[in-house]
Image (cartoon, one colour):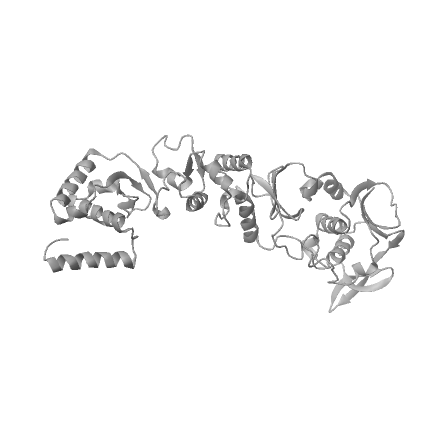
Length: 432
């Protein structure tokens, strides 16, 4: 039995002899780029002793080998129709072992030439004028490729969830391994990681062995296609899966970098309809405060908040995402100390700068953060309970000045503001 790969047009012998003779390098609709794939494919099959035949029309192109040596190394030199070539069976080496590399290349080339190229299981070769046909021995591995074509080529998959014309497509995770296609052809797989979706990417770069050149760039493209989703159902499906599986050690999507591109407006629609809890905030929440929430990676949450500032995310209603704030009930001792601190300030000339700020209490993720100004509010850390009243008064003064000026911590302009206040106090020979 053979696997027949058939496409329109009759291949020239030179396609197997001239390295770099690709006519598809500048054609973004084509898979091939280097003009070397057909040569590597032949070398791979000969190296692995896989029987095959190639017909250009009704003429068979015959491939044989002869032993040779170069600087003491034994090689098998490839002959085509009895003519010596510069090719050897050592081409490609480990990158072209197994059946997928050469089957991928032969079928990809066929699709580049003929979108209706076929794969058939046949008993005997049947050459045909006007067509190129490869006949490859139906080994168990070739049989597996034939029966599970969707694992290697996304074109036949019926489980597509979303399509982005500019970037590619998203599929269900039909098997529990990371699967990334490039222009419909498998270019990356990893059985050690579990995915939420499978991906077909148009823009990811591959090397001459037809695998993803940079896993970092691949992850960037995966993130971009996810952030570009416009179907709220698929976005909700993704967030639900990500939240429920976040504790999985090898979940592929939880290690994406969410800084790639912008979220589509559909993301805000979904995110605004659910309760989002960053995973980093969990240690600061009391029992039950995360109930009903979607526990999501902190990086994803901060990127959502950065783009959609009106979005409510637990602990991220802050200008400083490195010191998120979780509101808590203050103790009676802390309340009494704050009342004393406010009374102290109101008995000084500083009272003219106090605008009856709204005080809130809670916990900051950064140990040293004791207060924060936010939209006229002053947020006070529960840690102030152990501080003296005068220290609390100083925190209130600092945060009040942030609210009045809009200046941020650790900025020159805020430093200049304090110098100006102090200077005015010196001129008047009285507290500011």
